[in-house]
Every structure is written in structure tokens, then in C-alpha cells.
Image 1 (cartoon, one colour):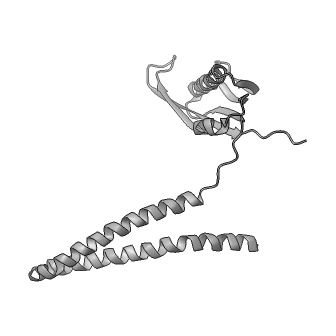
Image 2 (cartoon, rainbow, N blue to C red):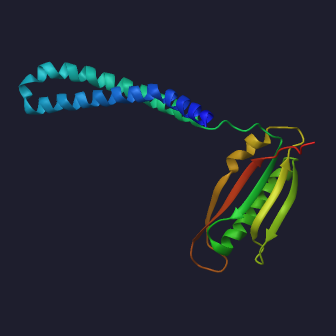
Image 3 (tube, rainbow, N blue to C red):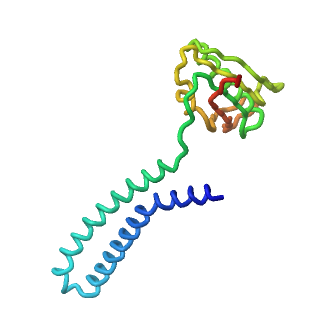
Length: 192
């Protein structure tokens, strides 16, 4: 569609300065390589080449710094903008790798989030809890709400991802690694 073409065109246009600087940087590196090759093949001309090489190294250092900051800026601008903050979030915890031990770890994580919420006087409402026979967790979903309308999503979003634990399980003498997945989503108010 034309909107997609416009979006791609804008993205390419925003990368144009980065591409130009990258090409210039590559040309400087190539020029430096040529000078070093001339210097190694004809050491007698070192007095002529060394000042030029020093100046070139300074230019390369400057362009490398500019290229790095432009690349970082380009990367950051391509990231999706953060969702609006919410005083209420949905927490989802699931076991990852590690079998029964991972389900136990997932339950411990779920209970830890519940304790933190209670300690901070946040509301912790369990929406769904699927336990295993070993007091583990197959899936746990809860809604956490901050009564003061604080930016709860910003506070908890850093918890999203894979959590890992290494410990000796109750039924084995070997160290085992288990993981659990934590997802934090902003909760949206119901539509009226």
C-alpha cells in the first residue's frame, strides 16, 4: 500500500546520513591501508607518509565516534515507542526449561511477585492459576494494581523476560538450571 511505501521511504531517508558517513569512513580506512602498504614497500618515503597517516588516523577516530553516535541514535529512533503507562498490569508466569524443577521455580516467582505487591500495598488479584502435583506452576496470571495511579507498568516492565535459577533439586545430587518466563503487560481499562 502507499502508506507502507511512505513508511519505508522515510526509514531509508533517515538512514541516508548514516550510509554516507559509513561510506566515508570505509574510504578513510581504505586510504589508510594504502598508505601503510606504500610505507611497508618503500620505507624511504616514511617522512612524507607519516604526517599524512597521523592526520588520517585523527580523521578516522573522529568519524568512528560520529558513526557510533549516529548508529546508536538511528537504532534508538527505530525502536517502538513505549506504551502509555498504566497503574495496573497483567503478570503472567510460566515455566521454561527444567521440567518439574522449572514448575516449582515458576511458582516461587509467582509467589514472590505476590509478596512484593502485598508489601507495597498493591492489589494482587489472581486471575488464573494452574498448579502441578508437586506444588509447581504450569501457568499463573494475575492483575496487579497500584491504588495511587503510579506508573506501575514502567516499574515492573523490566521484569519481563526469562528468569533463570541454578540449584540442586530435592531429588538429585546434580546442579540443575531451570528457567521461567515472566510477561508484564499494561492493563487497559474496560471499554464502556
